[in-house]
Amino acid sequence: MKQVWAPWRMEYIEQAKSGECIFCVLPKADKDKKNFILHKGDTCFVIMNVYPYNTGHLMVSPYRHLSCITKMDEKENTELNRLTQKCVEILRTVKSPEGFNIGVNLGKAGGAGFDEHIHMHIVPRWIGDTNYMPVLADTKVHPEHLQATYDSLLPHFQTLSR
Image (cartoon, rainbow, N blue to C red; front, side, top):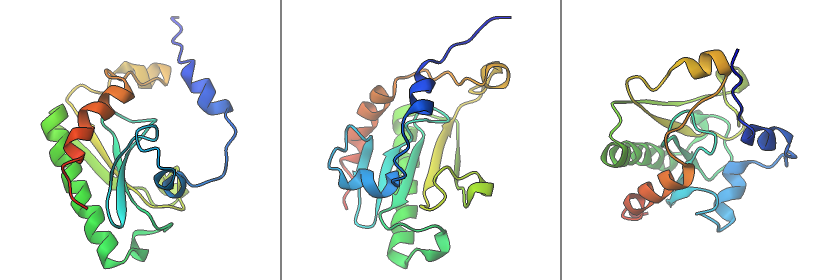
């Protein structure tokens, strides 16, 4: 049997969990590049998933700490959906995916990692992007470094107005 190593995961596993909500703390930190924030709107922002399912995995979140989409006001709902559309357009332009998975995981049972703060996932997909690695080795291989993805997407998000 061959061994597959992903030593970078241990840093994540062992790091002290602050208990802070990343969707509340990171937009206020004023370190957008370090935190992979691509765009800040009036009520919502776009951030890259630093543990992505696929290259270019983005999330759109309201600033307000809300646990369910039913608690968003009309302005938040409109901006969340407008930014989701823009994410799809920009990812199509920059990464040329053949499809997308888009959705919100509500609650722990629904698969939410941060179940107390809603966020929309936009995951670009390509035919053949899933292979034996996740099935046999519980490892996902990404063809591009996170910083390179951020750098290629950022100029397109900078053209968006608030």
